[in-house]
Image (cartoon, rainbow, N blue to C red; front, side):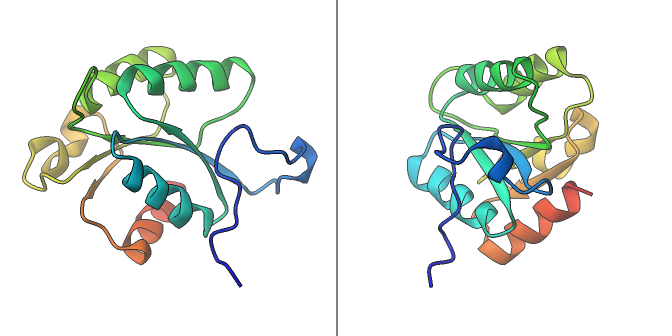
Length: 146
């Protein structure tokens, strides 16, 4: 049995009524495709439908499009340091302009980055330091979704 069979993108072939009402919508911005896939699979295990953006501008556009369509995004996880374009903090600033109540988590491999160590000072609801194990990630995400 494969634990990683959950649909991971908005383009899922499931009709909306087939999705569980308890399924959470999570937007993940990470510029590394393998990490994006890791987040998709790990969060699928806890009944999250994951929307992936590979850069800040795409994350803002995806968030805006989904909310314009009436979808509530339960949690946003932003990689703080990306190779090109808007970083996590700049992306956060743009998302908060769209929805000041958005729950946004900072994520970084630089565990001593002030955005990770003092995330609340910057408006984030939490932080995830990479590398992260599946169980740790799912436990943290579940705690952020409460």
